[in-house]
Image 1 (cartoon, rainbow, N blue to C red):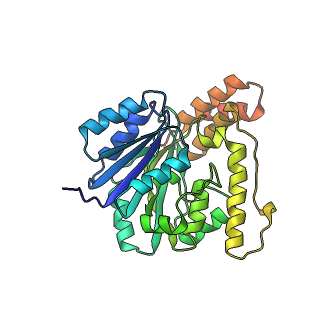
Image 2: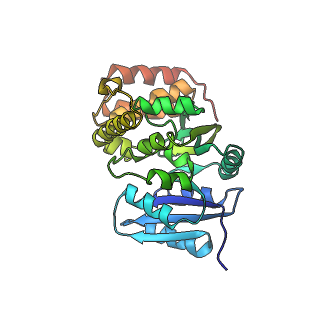
Image 3: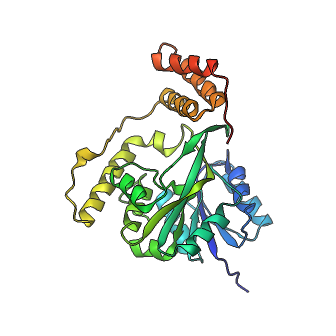
Length: 307
């Protein structure tokens, strides 16, 4: 007898063995349990394949798709095409779900049938799992769509999203014309057929590290963002001026990343994380005045907020 799931969780994996167990565990330990868990192994060459297979032997909800390396967009569309539920939940191999995430999002979607895509606030963590800051304050459709129309991503954090499968099919799934900005393009298209929203609680721990797409593919990502926004303006018959978007294609260095995370953590009140990343930035560039400043004030300020 075929299982009848009300939710399909889709997680592409490419060489994600470092954080993969923690990510899978956070899905399998959800308080809401009636879901299928589709894991797409996108040609990994590390231990990811074995980890996935080991979990699949223990939990019948896991469905494994093994393929040659085809990239994120192809993998996401494969997962959707293989799914059996009307609601799709996204997950990434380096993030951590709050145990009530699925239940809270499903309850929200049931009460708000006009919402086609739902995210949540997220808690940014670093590669070691230490808290940097909260992220993603916008919760209403108008706020989220306005942010995306300015070319500012993260109005809905991709791995925090639940999306109606019928809406995904209506807009043609993920579009490979916008590599590394496929989520922004999707949110813009979905906003034209329904409403977007975020739950105003942190339901995902969203990992930041220097190997992420936002750091390694920044130039291409920013071009794709501009192209996706321009396409949305044209669909909506609005005159488009590319200068409205602050496009900075410069690749973030390891130093830039640690300095950014140090300041974010400090402003959030998490001085332990701020000091850690300030010190890492200092070791990379000890003569930078900004890093000297954050290092000093994070050392002098002993207060740490835990959330």
